[in-house]
Length: 165
Length: 203
Image 1 (cartoon, rainbow over the protein chains, first blue to last red):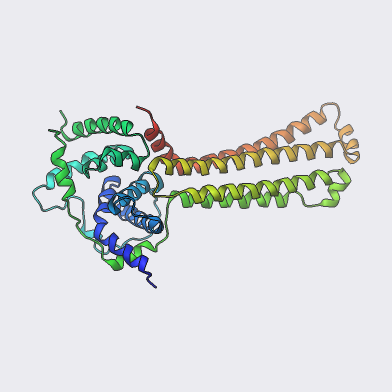
Image 2 (cartoon, rainbow over the protein chains, first blue to last red; image 1 turned 180 degrees about the horizontal axis):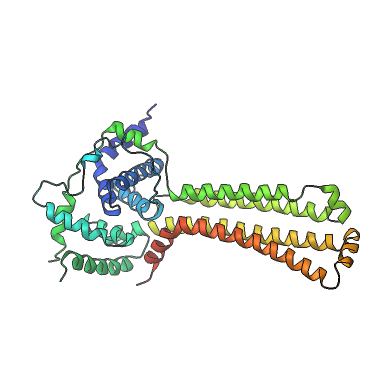
């Protein structure tokens, strides 16, 4: 019983699922938690989808819901629903598997991101996506000035993590 | 040029190792959520149920209350207890409905913490209320005619000892319940509290 809304949503989700994967990869350390968070973000997106009015870009809205879920709603739990059925090939994946030449750069970027706090991760992810300070401030609910100051501090920290002296 | 800029391109062009198809995604969105809000909601429902149960258990023998002259007091206690529960169910539901994942991170966290605060007040008021009702009931019972002879037989320090035991027992029960709730919620919103503090910290 798929409504039109659901079909549209699944289509959008399929096209833009890389956003959720990026957030999951930044906020979790293993494949099980990754899948778990991916599931929770998808559920939250679907629950909020009928309220999405298109006042922002779909991808920006997705980022907001995904980050909100990772920062505020998600709890790592030892007991989790088996995700094998939903992620049939997930056992074959590891975060280290990238065959392009940028592999090392991306790998060290993720390693550095893992050492940031939840809020700093959000700031860095939005920065890497080239979001404006206005969008970042709106997404997090802080002032633009505050967003800038926090971002500058986080960037300094990230640079230190990427290039340790 | 910002040395982090080179990472932007790598970040934005990263591929997905194993994208999910429509069918898997469809299954995924109909799974049960494990969100913290849902857990706060469940724990709160459990609390409402628990306090309701206490309200039902405490006033049992109305005839007995009549003999002690507690009848009207206990009617008042019950009415107040139920009114309080209804008021808080309304407040709690309103708060819960306000939690929306697509508002800003700060607003979302604020709303979750407000919901938590409402439940905390509910528990606190109920515990104080139960302690007061128990204390008053014991006071009336110990001063009733039936207990007069017992109190006299206990000797000079008897009543003080009896009261000490009653007060200690009431405080002990209330304390244990308060600790239990604090711990339960503490564990639930530990991460949220930490993140909220960091985000709202003025620079």
